[in-house]
Image (cartoon, rainbow, N blue to C red; front, side, top):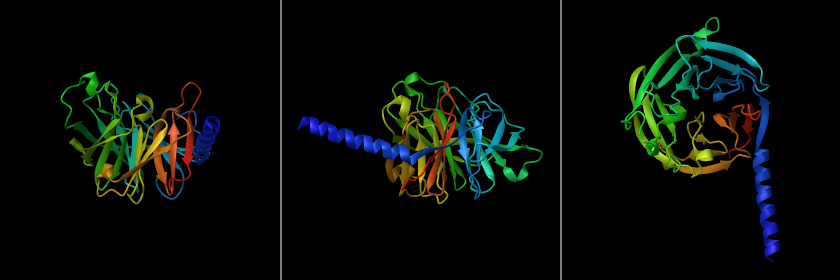
Length: 285
């Protein structure tokens, strides 16, 4: 009886994993120039997407199609890639670049660049600059058990930026903090408005990407092997609605996610000859 039960459970688990794997498919390999994709955003009706590289790389935006072909490279002339970690947009013509990677929790120059795609000229563009500080950070860096001021994920909604922290504390308990910042140039204060616990594994439960659907009704948070999907919230109380977890079939270094209609696109970084791909999560219903 025990053996039969074990075989049945193994069948159920295997079938479940296969279903998840079928739901998340590889679309294409990313081009060699984009080996550390840390943000992804789609604007317009086509499936072409903008992406960026991670810390210390060029201050460039890459427009790529779903075959992995680079269609355009745009240099942001007045921006430095200290630690570009995420992309967001207003859904029309503005891309926002999150230069707020903060592994040591010691940065005092956290920045979001706003780029108007209609102002691109000769493959270059200037950006408006929003700098900010976290209202609850008093030490740079804080004690190792309190290091939850790194970020790799944000969204834009109704004239505000919303940043989700990447927890790097030695007392990791899965908590990501939600901050709200006015989308204005100059120096702003990031107000803490919510918290959510993902799960307890530091490797696979730290938030590395985020996006909001075009209709504003779904928010997705990405980790290396999961998507946390939030719905039925009111206003910007994202964590007070319903939440569910979509398990992904592997735990690569995934750092970027974006909605396109009823699907999600995800990218991961190329590391040790693994990753560097664009994935499509076919159904999120």
